[in-house]
Image 1 (cartoon, rainbow, N blue to C red):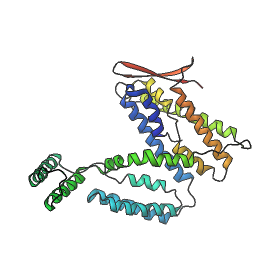
Image 2: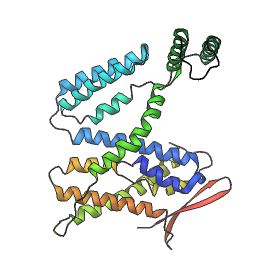
Image 3: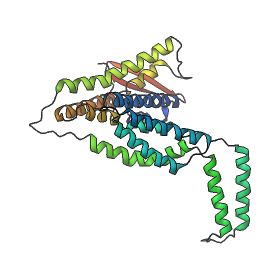
Image 4: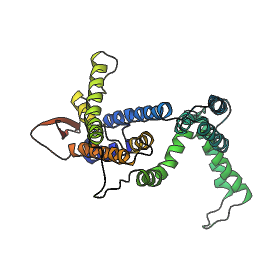
Length: 315
């Protein structure tokens, strides 16, 4: 379940700049859709008795927030307050609150309604006023007029900056270097001792499904979409390169382990078995980029007249 974007892109990056950008975009795109599907699975199958009144209140607030952002302006403080309330309403409704986070993300504006030429003109005018009001001294203490011009620059920049891009940029380091590792350490632990019992069938099924299931699914549906003209391959990309990407499409960690904990609540043996199965399945796919056995499925990544072959053992 749910391709882990961070891990899959990290493994793909070991091939360096020789991997075409369109392949990285393809991997990122279906991984995002995969994560949304995982959240829907959580909401539908792993929610307790649903309180529809709480859901209704939450959806109304999400609609209000979206309309506020669209017709008025993006206000971070108001968004945080309403987001906390909406998260609490979904929590009380019995639906897993991760679905609230996904819905809230859709309300954050991607673009601004602003004339770039006018913005550049206003920016130049304020910068010129600030330059005229300042001296060349170092360690300068701002005057009231200088503080006013600096504030005007902040306001002007805020008006043109994409809220969604800004949040993604600001939160990237926090998520990548703190939230994701904390999640991994708190959820991925498996206690093993000589008296441990494991569900071997469950472990094997998950390991094989992550590897073979995703490989067949991504390759088959990509082929069918291209074959029946529903989709088309990016320029300069061959189908065998999509097959190469499919070989690492089953790398799952965060959402896979999260669903594991929800599905087998109270059953420690099944939880640990599923975690080991996930780790084994991920290892199989990482091994695809490192081994070159006689029986291989190959994908050639081309860029600047250089080739690199990603190989994966047939199952």
